[in-house]
Length: 312
Length: 252
Image 1 (cartoon, chains in turn green, red):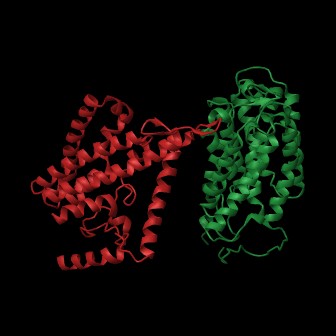
Image 2 (image 1 turned 30 degrees about the vertical axis):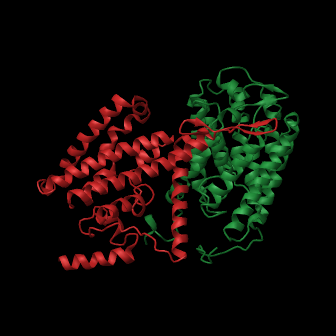
Image 3 (image 1 turned 180 degrees about the horizontal axis):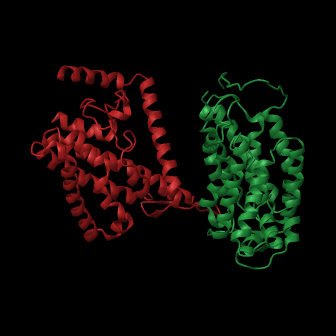
């Protein structure tokens, strides 16, 4: 770390919050979804995948930093958050070593090679998931619940079949480990909002723009049942509350956050309705991650007393 | 004859088009899904490169400076057409898998680059050897990338499956990581190989061994097409660049 910080104009506020505090709070926020996922997929032994993937993320950060003679940063818990988020985005039946490959890719290639925490250009956990999705497509789209294989409710929805919205809300459905229960995710998200960790602008504009897109192009008009099913299905909730709000890969400006959320909402709707697969949240978020530098540049706030373009 | 061997060494190691000059990235990234494709693409390019270098070097005093680019393109395109037909006739399987990238050899920047910066200024024999060196360097680069991508992404080496590992009754079969035979894998493998190559060179330099530095602009800065990019400060500037400046001053 160099000591050059760009200081904005006064007044300044001192705070005791550190990265590790925030990461700890995110971990606590993820706890309900994790515990529900482990219980939900107890027949598939989902806990092994969760533990192994999280451990692999932390260990690969430790080993990389030791090998490269860098300060060891596993205490800031960001690697643990990455590993846990990745695990929650994997189907419970995935072989454990694939989870390890995804975690190593996420931490070493996406995060460490670009300079560690704060430098990664896209969400490491989602990049790891997309890496696995492209590499092991059949295993990554193989969903089991209670020993029965089948499509996820979102895939049913895409093919025009009826889905049980109540089940999708509670979470006893097929899907990845952490995405199934909207209630569990919302409990964690509420905690993070109350603690001031996440900004409502990103998930809010994401979900609203997604609903608008689905209403216009979904072919069902304003059908609450259809829209609820879309909102509760797949990784939308997990993505909107826990992954889109990642500090490193989301814009820092207030209006930028809204643009970023709209961007994700439109892309998710586009992928889900017109794309080849039922799910599109992960790709929508990482594509929007790539747009963040551009969004920040456009939405840069103007200092008081300066005209357009920062000139006096 | 020394000059000729130097040209081959230059193309293979010092200015390897794939790993040092980073030229011809389009075929490098697109066709190296397997080792065979890499070899095929590399050798096709080598053949075109040798022939076009030779012909352009022969014609270097006839081609007017103002229309040299169209003239080079005509020469290169003729040889590419010949290679295209030969591949279609004799190795149709390779022709199918390389597809569009064979006609695209015409606009491969290695070929035009060598024509512009070397063959159009040098005698015939060194130009031929320059073509051989650059072509082989390109072939080696493509083959390396192809082998790595094929092993990781498809579990094969030159089309043969990797043997399954047997530990008593458990049979471990390799599970291909499909991303490596798709577009992102090409970037990952290329960057890792370039990094490994730079690491080896750096280690050699630390041990005090003589390391071949990229001369880059042996022909001087003024006529170099990438002068605007490097601004007269290319890689290996301290050794090669200064002598070039002297040469330029003498010339002026």
